[in-house]
Length: 448
Image 1: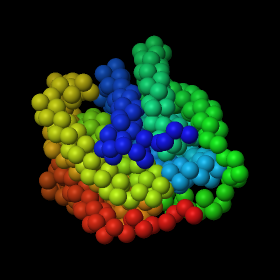
Image 2 (image 1 turned 180 degrees about the vertical axis):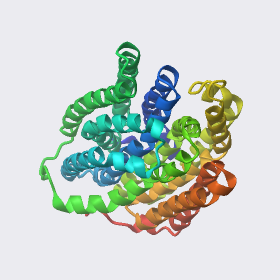
Image 3 (image 1 turned 60 degrees about the horizontal axis):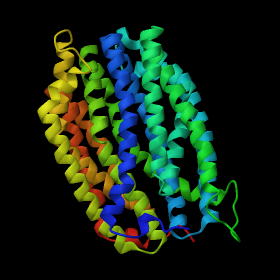
Image 4 (image 1 turned 30 degrees about the horizontal axis):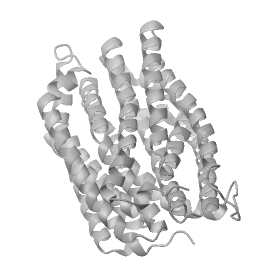
C-alpha cells in the first residue's frame, strides 16, 4: 500500500493539506447552517430566527457529541493504521460505528421526549417557544442519520482520507440550501421546513457515506489478521478516549447551552442578535477546530509508527497555521462586521438584535487564535490517548464560561457572556500545553 502522507514528508505540509479538505468541508457544513439562519431571519421573521437560535445551542451539543465521539474512537483506528495492523484497524472502525449507532438512537429518543422541558428550563421566550420545540421534534426524528454522518466523516479522516467527507459535505450543503428555499419560500413551512431540509440532506449523505466507507475499508489487506465485526476490548479502550474527546469537542456547545438562559433573559431581540453572532463564530472557528482534529490524526498515526519527534514538529507547525488563520479572520471581521451581521438582521427593523450581534463579533474576533492553540494541543494529547488532563482543562474552560456569564451578566449586561469565552479558551490552552511539555503523552500505549 502507498505510504500515508501523515508519516512522511514535512509535518507542516502534511498537516495543512490534510486539514484543508476538513476546513473546506466544515465551512460548507457551517455555510448551510448559516443559510438556514439567513433564510429564516429574512423570509420568516425575527421571532423565527430567535427560535432556530434557541434550538441551535441544544442541537449542536448532540452534533459535537457525535464529532467528539468519532474523533476519540478513531484514535485507535489511526494508530492501527500507522502500525499497519489493518485487521484490527477495520475491527476498530466497525466497532465504533455500531456503538455510535446505538448511542444515537438513545439520544434521539431522549431529545424527542424531553426537549420541551429543556427549552422551558433554558427560559426560552414564550413568543418563540412553540417554533423552537417544533424545530427540535423534527430534528431529533432524524438524529441517527445526522449523528452517523459525523461519525463516518471522522472515520474517513482517521484513514487519512479527508477529501471524501469534503465531497459529501459539498453535496449535503448544496442540497440543503435548495431544500431550504423550496420548503420555506415554496411550501411556506417556516421553521419546520428548515428542520426537514436538514434531516433529508444529511440523512441521504449518511447512507451514501456508509456505503463508500465499507468499500474503502475492504481495500486494506488483512491476510493473516483477524477482522471482527465487534470487539468488546476495543469498545472499552475507545470509550476511554472518546469520553474526554466528546467533552473537549462539546465544550463550546455545552457552554452556549448553559449560558442560553442568561441570554434568553434579555429578550428575543438580544437572543436573535446573539444567535447571529454565534453563527458567525461557528464559521470562524472552523479552521482552528479542523487543524486541531488534523493534529489528533497526525499524532495517532505517527505514534502508531513509533515517531514521537515528528509529532512535536507537527504541533509546532500547527501553531503557525493557526496564527495565520487567526490574523486573517481578525482583519476580515474588523473590516466587515457590519456587513456580515446585516446578512442576518435588518439594521433598521431589528436595531437591538443588530447591535448585539455586532458587539459579539467585534469582540470575539481578536481571540480565535486561542481556541486554535488549545484545540491543537488537545488534539496532540487526544491522538496519544493521554486524555485525563486535557479533559480536566476543558472542564475548567466550561466552568469559567458558565460562572462568569451567570455572575457578571447582571452587572455588565449580556456582554459578560462573550467576555467569558476567551478567558476559558486561554486557561484551557495553558493547562493542556503545560501537560504536553512534560512529554508523558509520548510514552502512552493504547495499542498492543
